[in-house]
Length: 436
Image (cartoon, rainbow, N blue to C red; front, top):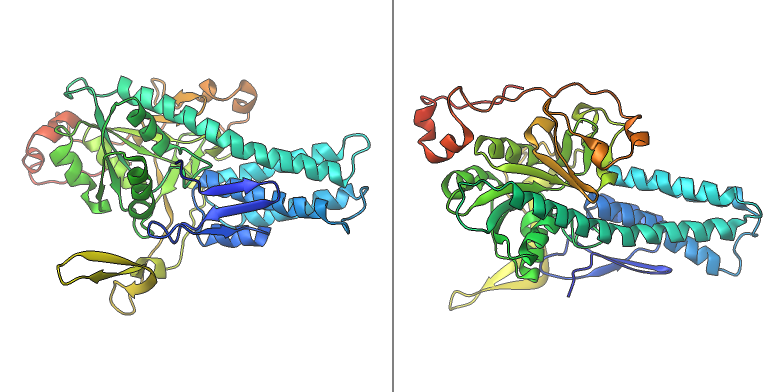
């Protein structure tokens, strides 16, 4: 059975409360746009594609209620209807500022209602029905797009796996949650992993716990176990050791992540910790892929320096929530469902910094996988968007220069050397740093 983070039928929307996972599956009703705003802000629903769809559908639910209400506004009130929908869209965009999908969806839906209102003999019912159809189409299109992302990404990984690796199957590393729980279904980065698994090309998945919200441990692990995909959880700080000690023996070929916003130059904002994985992947000669729909690519943003990074409360770092565990006389562990408690894991009065995202420089990214194909760099190191965007879009792209070069290794040392030699000896005790 396919996991569903979003359940929708005309006039009814439910979301899987991801704060209760992986120990409880509880769906909550989204009846109003304020319900949706709160669910997005609190991360009961998360993932850039999913929050855009839930936001859009929450308005569709409210609009459907108005259409069914005998006391609805007269049919001629098209301007008021357009203003009402636009106000709700603008409010929802404020729920989480970093992910571009929500703003992109809002802009497109505004265009839909404006176009519908300007049709001859249009009335409020015309506008409302046009909005509902467009929001519902986003739900359907996202699943199709994710399946295409998965296929393109899996093909790219297999084509670019190192010739020195043994065997036909590959292992990968992923971060945060980018699967059915973060989208309308199938997933972006996790969609690539699902595609690899479906063609028997996947050996193993290593997924990070993704502190401080533990989306990897709670959600990605939940999806991988549900689908029967061979996987192992690691803490965020174990990634370097994993690449160093198991990179070759486990055929670790790629780090595959999602994205909340991709700038015109390819700089990518994603869950905090992504940048560190990109640095480690480059050092160890492992490919680094970003998997995201074209709606995540923000051509109006020149570079990562222009991306607003959401900062969340300190308490999410110093406290942690989960169900209590009962230990039997025989030593067996039993999770006590419905007993969620919050505990402090830091010293009293600890201050914490909690950026929800970081920005990975384009120079560290090998490819960006979209539903239309894989975007790679030219000889200058500049991503070639023409494969997935039309010329009319590219003409509006702000001019970007060549990316800054990041020198991860001293002269004479290659990534493959670093994976097979005594690293500390190679650097004479000096730890290499990125020169950005």
